[in-house]
Length: 80
Image 1 (cartoon, rainbow, N blue to C red):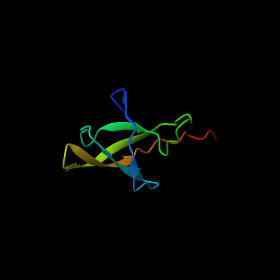
Image 2: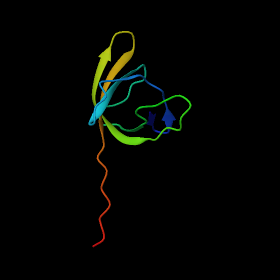
Image 3: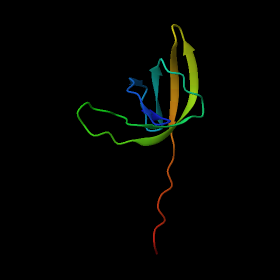
């Protein structure tokens, strides 16, 4: 995951075609635009997609749980 140029490897959960969730010790604001490589396999070149943090829950011991939605991209206009 990338945010403001910094990368972090996180464990994801609840992955769907619309988004995913993850936990982190870092605090990210709701509405933050991030880039995510989902799924990420060690040793492979990641492909990043745009996403937005939609939901933040503070957990005990300085942890956070995030809900993320993939950001729709514009489809290229077809030439007719």
